[in-house]
Every structure is written in structure tokens, then in C-alpha cells.
Amino acid sequence: MKFKRANFLLIGTVLMILGGGCASLAETGGSVLDGSAFAEKTLASYREEPGKKIRLDRVRPKNGPEFITIRIDSIPNLRIKGSLPDGEGNFYLSSLYFLSPNTNGWNEFTLELSGIGSFVGNDTAQAGAILQLKGPVETLDISEGKIRRGASRLTGTQALAALHNRRERVEAITQWMKEQPNLPDFSDRETFEEYWTPLLFPEIVKRKERPAAWTEGESWVIGEDVKWNTVYTESVFPEELWPVRNSGTLLRDWEEASGWIYFVFEWDRIVESLSKKIELKKTK
Image (cartoon, rainbow, N blue to C red; front, side):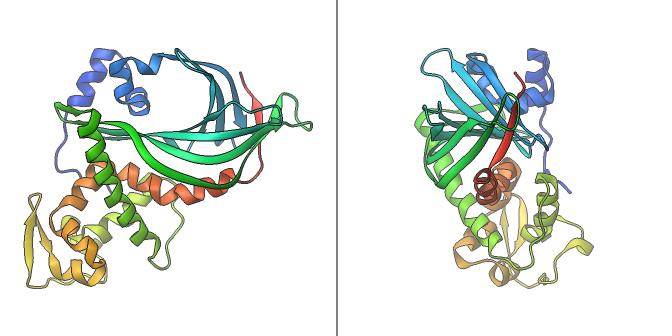
């Protein structure tokens, strides 16, 4: 179930100009438009064996030192960056890049990281290696980013301010989500959205899909062209989220950045999975 109040043609128009497909734009976002997507060369690639869920690349940028990137199939728009391994196979995480596309544009940002991992040869597999993060991974500040909203594009300090504000709201709603009881395992973003949409926004779904906590109430406010049930808001959400939901800001975040919310919700699991020994096989 995916609720959208409008269907914009901007992305499709850009794709026609570029001559590419939806996947290529979704994976590269604004970097296609500014040319940075073509400024790197992949020197070597490794894939998880078995499963092929994790990919590690050695990358040479147009300018600057070589580095490694880690990608995860379940969140294709995430790229974790680290230094080249030293003589003992140790490397240092430096940042992650994430793109959250939507029907009207996208959010993209680079988030600084602090953490250590290892990438060493594996004697049990020909042209193989073992990848493993060691210890905690700390997420720091957003260092750069861009936002596309319809025909407008935010860059520089304006984009950073908007991204910082949205990050605070994303972290607040995901923290509340994680505290809810009896959560299922979400196999992908689609199942995540299907589960949470009726709970976050019962006003926009069919009556039969509304949660048990729903009550018609007698108090309503308008936000983002939707009439919100403040009785439901105050009975389900913590007080700090009341203005975010009642103003429609939470709905706008969901429409423009549900992929970002899913990524933050899954981040601890991602780090946990990368902290186990992962056998990779060279494919390039």
C-alpha cells in the first residue's frame, strides 16, 4: 500500500532526456545531473558467497585517493565508504552516501561515519576475502547533500539545514517505531511501508485498514490538506511527535523520504550483519 497525493512527471522527463531507465536515476539521483556519477572507476568487485547480498568495490575517483565501498542489496541506494585496507587488512569507515527518491524528486546526503573493519584474503576460497566490521559504528554529521522538490533544487547550506531538520524528525519517528511491541521482520521497504502507513496515517487509508487504537474523536486539525484526528495523535504518539503529525509534516516526510526512514530503522541491523564474518568472492 503506497499513498501518494500527487504523481509528478519530473523524474520521467529527466529520464527521457538522459535516455536511461528508472533504476539508473534512482541509484544515482542528482549525481547524474552534475556529472559526479561518472567521475569514478571501479577497479575490483567482490560479492557475498553464498547469498550475494553484500558487495565490496575498490574505487578510483577522478580526484583523490582510492577507497572501498560496501553496498547491500536490500538497500540499493546506500553506499558505505572506507579507506583502503592496510597491510593487515584493517580499514577505517569515513562516510555513507544515501539517496531517498520519491515521485517529486529526492533527498541525497553524505553522512560522516567513525568505525573500523577488516578485509583480508580468505585461504578457503580462490580469489576470495573476508569482510567484517569491528566494534561500534558511530554516525556523525551530514557533511553535504542536495534536495530536489519538483522544479526546485536545494544545495549548499540551504539543503544542509533542511536535511538536518528532517534527520531529527526521522530519528524521532524511528525511535518510536522501534519501541512498539510485536514488530514483524521487514523483508524490504515495501513491507515496511505497508505495515506502518495505517498506523501512522489512519486518516488516509480505508476504514477497514485502520488500527484498533483509532477513534473518530471530536478534535480535528488541518495540515498538508489532510484533516488529522488529534485524539488518535495524543493517544498513540509521544508528545514531542504531536505537532509533527498534526501539522502534516510527518506525512510529508513519509511521502518524500520513507526510504530514509526505512534505512534508519534498519541501520542497527545493517551494522550487526556487517559485524559477522562475510565471505566474499572476487567478481571483477
